[in-house]
Length: 184
Picture 1 (cartoon, rainbow, N blue to C red):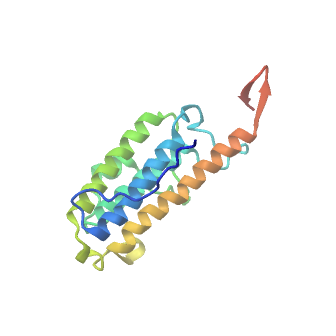
Picture 2: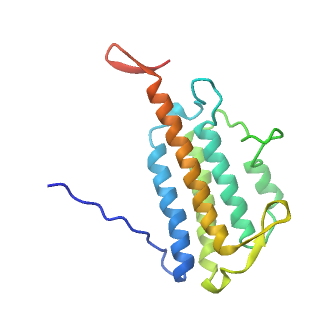
Picture 3: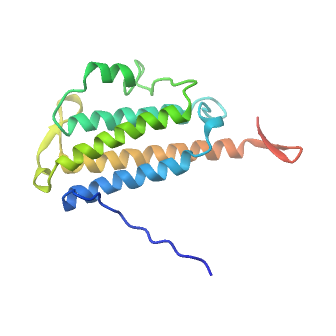
């Protein structure tokens, strides 16, 4: 008999109902991402067969940087210079994800864990009546707190798909040699 799973979103204790539900989507996506990248240490810098895709390392760093920016935006605060220096920019001078090379998966995940904890703390201080308030966004725009928290989860889901695709490309371009798989 197969044990069936029950899927649900689990708001963190102490969060108001809607904030908690929105944050639960971030948490769910993050936990899902952690399962996806388990065992990818050897693929961390792989950029596809033509080296034209973003690596897992680039995507993880980018996701951490963007979420960190949102943790400050949700408080209507500027990101401190020392934090910007530690994480680097969201994009390089060409508008692409900055290069990340030779950074172990464990380091990238530890950084992202810290950002996730900070984001959870920020959300825990919000209440449902804050949802319609606006916070600064890019290029002088604003976003409601409701949209911002949803967007964090949506952005994560988008890059989850990028990583899943990258893993699939790697697997499809492996060859069988003496009973084991080796990358080309």
